[in-house]
Amino acid sequence: MLGVDISEPLIDRARALAPQDTPALFQVADASSAELPEGAFDILFSRFGVMFFDDPTAAFAHMRRALKPGARVAFVCWRGIAENDWVRLPMGAMKGIPPPMTPPDPEAPGPFSFGDQGRVARILTGAVFTDVAIEPFDASIPFGKGETRDAALDDAVKMTLEVGPLSRALADQPDDIRARASAAVRAVFAGCPGERSVMIDGAAWIVTARNPAG
Image 1: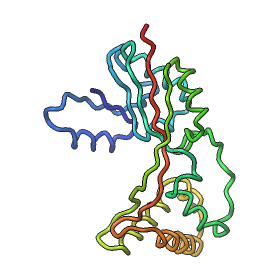
Image 2 (image 1 turned 90 degrees about the vertical axis):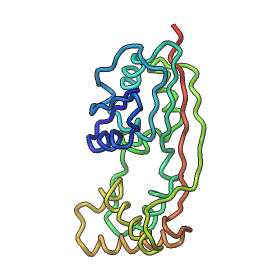
Image 3 (image 1 turned 180 degrees about the horizontal axis):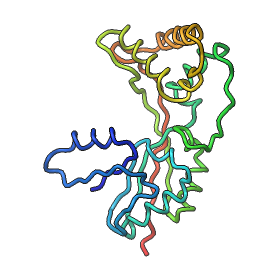
Image 4 (image 1 turned 90 degrees about the horizontal axis):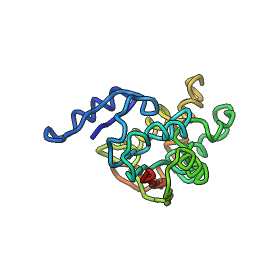
């Protein structure tokens, strides 16, 4: 088993969590260009990581060469912003507070760049995978955490304003705009259920495919 990630803190965390008797190696590298043993693995899998490749078709073609003939690929990725409350709700709450941003290219690397089911299929077939299957998966997910409801709401707001597209919208804004945005986001999250986390709707694709047998 080989775990590859471009983030050194994530690799350090993986090493710390892996059971001592697990035959696993971990490597800090860009999976789209990392040196990988050819034809070595039975499965390639990822959880919310494949949406950030600059050239995803080339990245999957590169990684496919590390798979045995007939081996599988399986990954989960976000669907669109409109279906994911961890961005949709704060975006709606903040509308009109910071200046409007230029909409990003929907296919630019980012958490929602695989939101289009057809694009995902084209990427995998372009990388010469077969038997591509893309299934929707919907779940209530915890966002933020705390020992009390107020602490959970505070943490959810903090996550919203520090990570992802909304953090960029507020990056250069004055304190009063950030304070108004924070209050608006907190108010919308307060309408969601949950005691130690804010429970929101999440929408993903579960994607599987296969390396040709030969």
